[in-house]
Length: 216
Ligand SMILES: Nc1ncnc2c1ncn2[C@@H]1O[C@H](COP(=O)(O)OP(=O)(O)OP(=O)(O)O)[C@@H](O)[C@H]1O
Ligand SMILES: O=P(O)(O)OC[C@H]1O[C@H](OP(=O)(O)OP(=O)(O)O)[C@H](O)[C@@H]1O
Image (cartoon, rainbow, N blue to C red):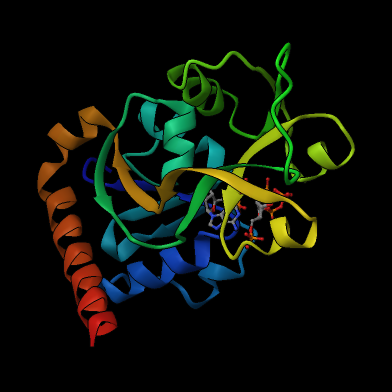
């Protein structure tokens, strides 16, 4: 279908908030949308197709054009640096990225080690600070690394701060605030501009209304 719009959705913790936002913007998503194990979900009467991907892979699908749009954490966009445009800050799933470690410790002078799920972002951050570090890529439980001597520091997401606290770690530096973004493939943006603009306008209204309510 020529004017079908495909949206890459991140499975996991962003998914429900993103689905709620889409419903509020008028999408008639099927009731089983949030519970399904299907990876492709068509909402035919609205000519939208959703594909469900790992959060870190969403920009890849959008860059390659197999998805026109995608929803992605800013952390993922900063790590992946894919050729996509960022259209809208959805203001959901907020958290931040920080440098953390054991209290009262200095980074090893000779070969400081930093464990993270975000190797590109972390390397860039320390390079910009003029610090040479060795990056150790992990896939989860990042807070474990300084506790057992794998690294001097970590670069990881902080949300409530509970994981740091319960593991006796402290934050040394806040790197960047994170929210989820709507991203678009540059070609789709030109070819399907009317439908994409319509969607962006609806989402913008919902986000602004929510912000106005929060301010009350
Ligand atoms: N406390 C948090 N921890 C991690 N990510 C968070 C948090 N709060 C919001 N986020 C957002 O959610 C996204 C990660 O979602 P999720 O944890 O489902 O994916 P994931 O890291 O690929 O998970 P996993 O590897 O455990 O399957 C991040 O990219 C970030 O933008
Ligand atoms: O500040 P908090 O509210 O404690 O949240 C932050 C923690 O949540 C994430 O881990 P996740 O739960 O995704 O598990 P993981 O270690 O397997 O990535 C993140 O990597 C932190 O460890």
